[in-house]
Amino acid sequence: MLVRDAMSRVVLTIGPAHTLRQAARLMSARRMGAAVVLDPDHSGPGILTERDILDAVGAGHDPDHETAHGHTTTDVVFAAPDWTLDEAAAAMARGEFRHLIVLDGEETVGVVSVRDIIRCWVPARDGARALTV
Image (cartoon, rainbow, N blue to C red; front, side):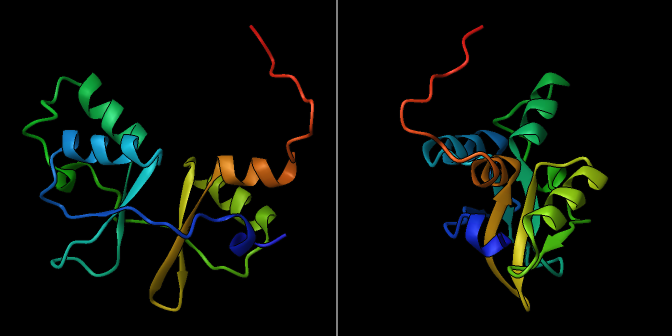
């Protein structure tokens, strides 16, 4: 199975001036764990994840004043739509991250997450019961 089969084609994009609270609200409303950050002052997209926001708030930063600019990962590893899910998972493991921006040439065409990959590897079964702790 390929990244194009697992990725989300709906991509949340924000600018570097969005506050962390604005980013969190947008991500929460769309049930997305990451936003692609488009900054005209930088080449290529960056990524802001739920983990970045949690780390900032946990460190005492004010989410109403801190902007995405200061918390965006700009040294991004990108996936291609024709990568296998094994290749994407290996890149995530090497980089210790949970989301990859998917580029087709220079165009952002999706985001693939660890959750997307797991859903493909372990398909839901009718009647499957959730694990309770």
